[in-house]
Image 1 (cartoon, rainbow, N blue to C red):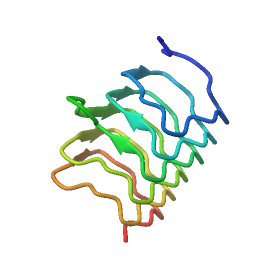
Image 2: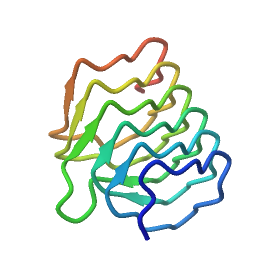
Image 3: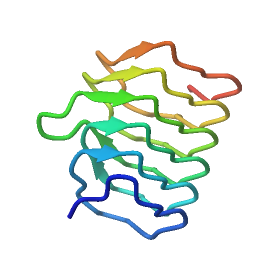
Image 4: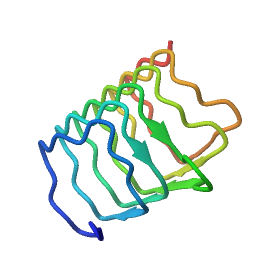
Length: 113
């Protein structure tokens, strides 16, 4: 299913396995345990991404994405690159981000514990 440019704000997407996404709005989505691949210009403002697995399979990039105030507790994002992404006020507590690269990222008021 091609979701490029889709407005999925407030969607229920728990346990979904997504392909590459471009310009998708998932603001306020209930997306716990979701599997995300490469992301470009997507928004996840106030989304619940607890236990999400970013960069699953061979994916490695998130470009220009907005995770403002997203709940990303215990999310996995090892080995990927976040370029120009915003994590302002996001909850990244206990997230696994080993070997991840953050280029021009905004972590203002984010929980990185």
